[in-house]
Length: 525
Image (cartoon, rainbow, N blue to C red; front, side):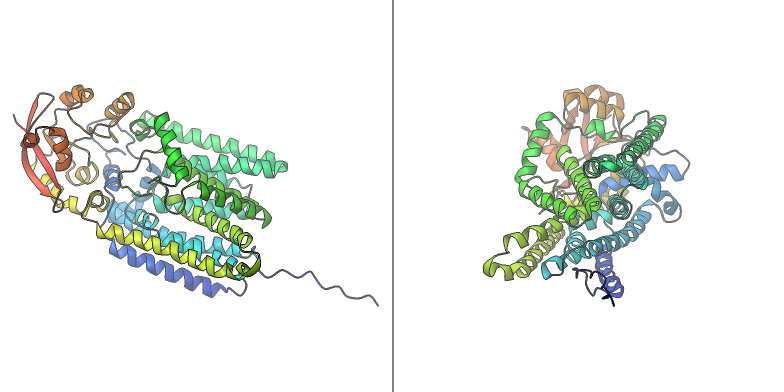
């Protein structure tokens, strides 16, 4: 009689005894915390969000997808896909409310996707307290990150781009050669252009690891290129340009990029969030990628690396954000945190594998996680404590609304206003806006910035003279601190200014806080 063989046993994993009910309850608690944060910021929007709301307003009123009715359409935003997705809800709720509702719903879904991706990774990891932290760390470090949560809930595209990238991760894990991956990368580029890099980076990593699949990869790359060509074609047909206008107004010089890379490697780059900056974190990412190959989730590891690398590269390329926060990296944070923590739990057991240190692994990991969460809470508290300070009062926009409502009631609707704060002002007043500083929605200013190699902080800049005289703005709205710099060394001249031969005098001051004001100048006729 032959002996009956037992089936091979499955090694216990870090996800042992985790029930679906427990995961659902965990997700519910995290969504509740996000809802509490959402209520706290219910009246706050980034000023930039109102630029997009202006496009939506004109679109739903049959005036075309444009910022200014007095000029040909200019793509003065980089998140056109997000704005188009808001139009159905905006028909009933208005764009600001629609952005809040859709942002919160997507945030809830995103939290669920992070939980499920963490669970899928945990099932591949060996049993042990260090490895079980993969179930908690990535989602906690994302949900309690101010930039990710706030920019998801303040009218920006963060929530929908995060959703697209998390779907990319999920599909890469279950169907690594799916045609949906190039599709998601192309769609993501309409939420923010650099997302187009995600798929070719992923395909490159897959090609070297699975050369037998090169036919599928080449076909998918061809499909990706066709999709991008189609998007570019329609963009050119409508806006007469193949890239958003900000590509011209916020380009980066070689020396600027070189300095940016240095700051990124030193870990001091403001566009990159803590703890995801510095050369040491690249080492952690490498160990995470190698760990993913050993865990037989190589395609998921490649997707994590491609998304994180895209976020890193974009932050290094981009000029420093005026918010002074890691806004540009926020949509990439969930993937980066998954990759980061996978690297942490791959390195720590190697460092603490001998002698008494072996018993310290779980404690060290736990303390490190608590420290990182504490730093996230500190950042949140710091921002909320300084809401009345610059740039935070522009970050939340609420202090700007009362002044622009006064302007809407007291200034002729046809009068042109020169300013750098274009979002709230344009949406609430609908006056013609001359964005002389950044030219986000102004093709001529953007081209001039590109030629000169810098934006225009001073309206008296000689390069602006021709455009200023052509536009002849009846009003100028600026920060008082900025106007003091313009008037220097004759600081008393702030009351009366001469700009390219035109006389301006102060019409009204709008206090922003105890130290700063908005100043509205009127042209003297």
